[in-house]
Image (tube, rainbow, N blue to C red; front, top):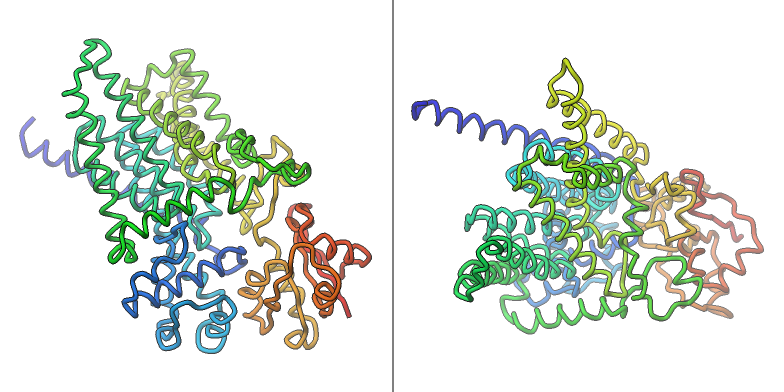
Length: 567
């Protein structure tokens, strides 16, 4: 074969990969972009406020003030600030260093676009960014696992309800999951090829993962574990454990990787430009405090019903939530992978593919163990595991269908595998898209779905409050009514489009007496499902129990919102 033919084949291969990556990018965007202005989650007004303060700090060159929270949520705030620049450029005429929720809302209400439009612009940037990172991950996965398992895995991920839901909100979890899996895949590619470019990509992605959310720091034990396992694998037969080899093959690459990650954190987070050590130390203290349960708790009904003080014992939380959040087809793929591995059907895959699937399992195991030790637990914190588990599931389906195709005469096994995977992905898409726009309401039907989930875990993250606003907008003179709502900011960021909003009124946990009377002295009071689940504001709920809601919002047969007409 002459050089020209080889060159043409190389260019053809690159073009094919780029076209496939572009098509996959569009597939990711299909469930993530539509309807970004249909409802608001309770955390998003806070991230809009932080993004505004971040944007203001950049405008004023007050770089220490880009430290808005120890999460640290820097990548989210960069995207949120960009949305201000695109959708509300006039904000720089009204900004102040540390705005509050109510003040920011008034500024947007008076001078800017409708709050929901600003939020939709921020969400669009998150969806596009997270999807683009996943496409880059696919290119690495194709090199590590082969085309069919990688394509199946990321097609599964494109229509996985919980990852979809997180990529559609202005928050940290979709970016955390995308950057962490990119860091893991790029590092695995380095271990396999020793291409230093992949090591640098992994380091950059690791730094961005930590800047997205502090659990991104758990990439460190995962990468160290993978590096040591690879060193052991390479030297197992020779038993050559000399420390010179360990330093050259493992320690030096890890040092370079860590240095790149730290440089990324220092470059991307302006707060690090003036006081790097103080900012990083404070952020790590916040992460430790969150892990120890100082902020938040385990979102299991059992923890609330039995007033568990030490919720760290719920070590099964993340595996349990995955079972509830995964689709039956994704779980079936994992079962098929276990069966085909056990019966050596996977011999159709290369040794590298099998090893890299094992390394993905190691990544999931290390991350799960690290997250399980902390007391603060939310199902959305498990985002980094979802791409890995979807790749493993895709590999299981691919292996089973290739095996089946090899036993049916008259058809090539690759053709059967492609057709079979297309059908599996189609049904995966149907199971996800039927929950639009509330992808968060998807729970595994094999376990009882959304009807059973509230008995096991806390549910609801703002879904349905938009429908409460749509009901109230038809009330005469609603703009002059007093409305008190659970998640008032989330309610108001949507309802303001119709000319009214809820009062920003704090209520202590066990409010009673005059404080409770003031809260009940409203035209409408709105309560929410996870408020009832946790019995938050028990005296309020007790008082409202004597009344009949004037309207309820029901999603998939479950009551999410109650609206009480007080006078």
